[in-house]
Length: 230
Image 1 (cartoon, helix red, strand yellow):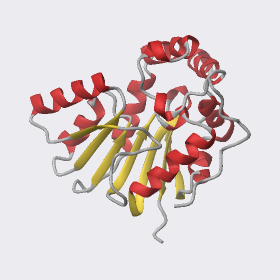
Image 2: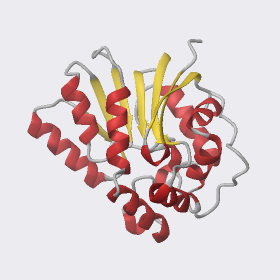
Image 3: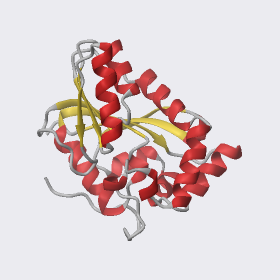
Image 4: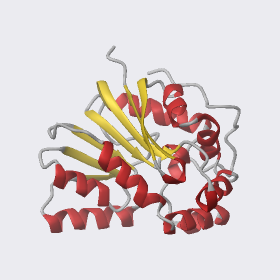
């Protein structure tokens, strides 16, 4: 599949947070970035994002779903409990988080596959999944990395398959918005999202029928798009 064009005029540099660094331990990422991420996490960004994803992911219950950047698997397992017939795979790069997710799945008696992987190199077969779920993942990549990530998302989706993205797509007021804008100074992908909006990012990524479903705190947006039927 032909690659998409780099996004915006941001030239990927040595300090860019690419998807291969997406879930590395905090000591491996620039300190200023981790400070603002920790503050945003403590103020509820990830909790609100997972809640929005759970509320707006409408499934029949028998689909194949790929959750990219699943972390320790809390949302992944919650989805499996809601839809027992769901064929769900969680992708995460941090091995400690993967181990925790797998242990929790076994403890709960849930059959969920957790695999180590990255946005631009997804460890799954072509046209396998009905749905790809990305929660606070796309804003971590920019330039050619984002193009590769969307190439992979489209590759693993079935024709007509859905991408549901929950991510920051607008500037928010107050302290929450200030923290996001400060993080964007060091995270080029997030700067793109604030400038363009999440829906436009999906359109640039080659998704069709793009629709904004909801908005939330921190400038969060819920946006859906589909892979071409062709």
